[in-house]
Length: 131
Image (cartoon, rainbow, N blue to C red; front, side, top):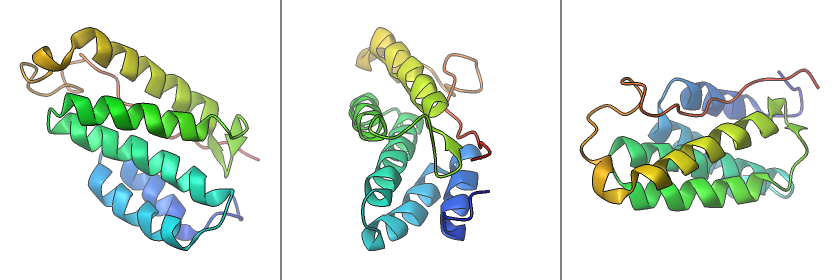
């Protein structure tokens, strides 16, 4: 764990990685509201990806695609490792998911019952690094 990141951030990471995307959003939003740059945009990028995955779980293709793109664009400003996490890996996994969603399309997304369990989609995870 990075000593520079607050405990709530790590709670949000755990929520993200366990698929609790709405809870992750709430946790990181509370940090985001109080933060200043560069952490503010960092938190926002991660929480936008979390909300994208929440939308995906509700078969909201448009919301998922838009927020995956916005969150990824925000995180591209950061070094490959930032705040104790592997930003490059999160961006890579998010880009792969976005590409797959674009190929599936909005019309077909609702026909897949449980997207990640059936191996149709691989959801991003936040990997830790040693800074």
